[in-house]
Structure formats: structure tokens, C-alpha cells
Image 1 (cartoon, rainbow, N blue to C red):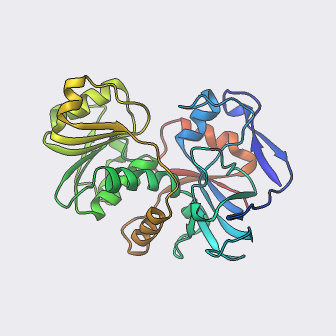
Image 2 (image 1 turned 60 degrees about the horizontal axis):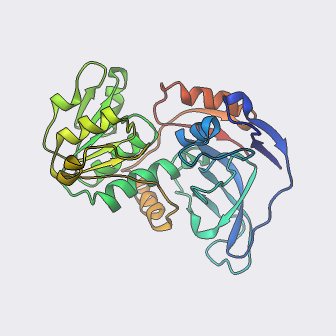
Length: 309
């Protein structure tokens, strides 16, 4: 099968398309023929510098998968050959999703929402699971609460806006001005141009902040807008707030994990018309380097997806 690998850390040029043997599913696993693979910031950060865990090549990137079950391992009853599935297998261990086939535990996948193409479904797992676990499982977002979503037009952000709105929250989004109309159409109640306005001066009394930027400056200003007892959830690095501030609010870094129940809940939101991924661009597998360059430009709305099968 074809797969993308890298022997060195570096820019997109280190990504190589090679041929290797097709894997076989072990007990409790399924073999999935990949139709499409989503790209996330963790992909290019891992490629460039090893990511938060300092990984060392050689390795194969990719976690978002949508495809069809090709074979099932010993004891698997959840799926059968031909079933359409999607998921974020093995994260944060390597899943090798930039490949024509992947293997993973059966419960790392869920049935693909029938109304989505494989490209659309591949845009969902990592970003939607991150948003869902942050807002529903950790923040326990309730109707009427006010949430501030940073980088709201990005992969996690555009789905977080929709999930928060589906939960009945009042959603405030930060993004550059050219993305405001898109975010209002996605359900944001207010949109702040972070290039022109200091969000810390524009809002207050916030219940939850979802921070995909996670710089010390963003954390400090985000904490300022939270009410006492509010929650700051960071996605790109550990919390660096003063101890006194951390005592006033709940603050912490979260790492997304495979989650069948959450994927099923995400699928239900899709089928109810409350959640839809935005795919800004697609690239064939052999153009993976160009796909990474596009993602790293910071101009993308939603997700970039590789077409595989």
C-alpha cells in the first residue's frame, strides 16, 4: 500500500510517499481502507519538531480517518466488512492515517454519518472530539452560559462554535474580520476581530474559554474575562497562569482521546443538522506536502483533507 513517512524533522519537504506491506488487524482490531484523511495542526507540529511529546522520526503521520472496513480481527462483532466508519484511531500514539489502509481497535471508530461524504467525515474526528470533550465532558457547558472560542474559524474552533450553540450556550468567537460572516452563519452570537480589538477589554463574565492558541499572553487575557469559578481549557500547551489566578478559576490543558460514545454523539448532531464540518481544500495523497503548507499558512477556514482511495 501507499503511505506517507518521514525520516527527519523539518518542513513539508520531509514527507515522502512510499510503498509498504498492507497491515493486518490483530484481535479486537479492524482493517480500514482509507478513503480520506483529515489534517490537523498536531500533524504539522509533530512533523516539524516532534510535537508536545518530542517524537523522533522515522514515523508516519495522520489520525483522522474515514473509510470502509476491509477486514475484522478475532473477536470483533461491532463491524463487518463493507461498513463505512470514521474515527481518530490510537491518538496520541501513531495511527499512520496518511495511508491507504490503517488498523486500530474497533471501538476507535464509529459508523460514518450517512449524510456525509468520506471527505466531510474525515474532517471531523480529532477536531470534533476535542471540542466535544472540552465543552461537554470537562466544562459541562449548560444552556445560557457564555463561552469564548479563540481561533473560532479553525479546525477545532468552527466545530466548537456549533457544538456550544447546540448545547444552548451564548457563543462569542475571535477571528480576523474576513471570517466574521462565516462564523455568524455557523451560530456565533458575537464575533471579535482580535487584530483590532483586545478581547479582554470587550467581554467579561465568561463561563468557559476554549483556547486553541494557548500562549502565555492569551491565557492571561482569557483568565481575566472569566467569572470566578469559570473554566479555561487550553489545547496547544500547558497552563502558565499565576497560582492565585488558577485558584480563582479552573484552568488546564486537555489532550483529546479516542471516544466511541462521543463520536456517536457527534454523529447525532450531524444527523440533526446541528453540526457540519467545513472543508476548505482537498489534496490527493501524493500532494501531502502542499496540503501541509496550506494548513500552516493560517488562512484556512475549517479543515484540509487528503483524498486517498
